[in-house]
Amino acid sequence: MGRTIVVALGGNALLRGNQKGTVEEQIANTLDTMEHLVPLLKDGANLVIGHGNGPQVGNILMQQAAGEETFAVPSMPLDVCVAESQGSIGYMIESALRTVMKKHGIQREVCCLVTPVLVDKQDKAFANPTKRVGKIYTKEEADALAKNQGWIFKEEVRTTGSGWRRVVPSPKPIEVLNASLVKRLAEDGVIVIAAGGGGIPVAYKADKTLEPIEAVIDKDSANSVLAREIGAEEFYILTDVPNVYINFRQPDEKKLEHVTAAELADYSVKGMFGEGNMAPKIQAAVDFVQAGGKVSVITDANSLGTNGGTRISK
Image (cartoon, rainbow, N blue to C red):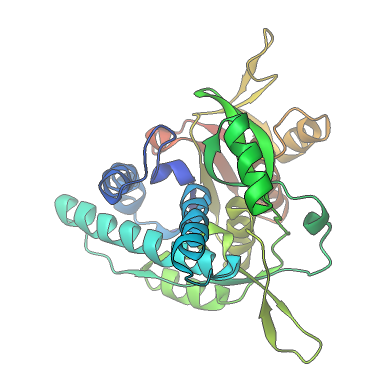
């Protein structure tokens, strides 16, 4: 096998913004996304796939709240909901990938790992929730949910429209606890689905036992850490736009194609990227390259294998 590549799929790889979230929609979207990974597989790359879970875990939380209110079924904590989303999304990715590989005559094994990720309980993120989960609501809907559920909302601005989304704490990932296993499997040619939804947040207590943490880790940050821990050469972050832009949607908008990590970090310091959207992707890509990675690419699935997107190197 050749070089090792970590690909972090955005939540829209399974669920698009204008969809209800039915399993039929998510399977169709996943099949489409997996088709775009075929060039990497045919090139002989060792492949590790991470994925977002923002829309899905938000829906799970809504289901939990409705079940408790209507049927008195106890709600599960956020870490369990993240684990649930890891399993369900990982299953769909694995199934779609097996279908696509069979279609293209590619013979590779695939496995999905439920993945805990270590965080710091004192992380300042717990005082400033920024991670967006769930669907986009109107201001009236968000206000009602904030009152009834105690949720925190922030405004969401996208090319498809604006609205309000729930935000939860997003602490920095410190260590992917089964990274060594991911590395061994990937180097043996197994396609590994890991660190889904940023991983299940956990921390060590004083007695060295693990405890769950109520948060959702940014999936790009977690996959950047995983890519570094397994010695990947390339790190791809898939989102819903083909390139990173500075002064996005302004008269002087500029598309970035080839940029150094230092240049991109400077743009970020100047506040040119959205706090809860592009900025974490920028930081994840910069961290990977500055830690020794060869190249990081931020793009959409359609641009995979075309040498397109925003390519970040030293």
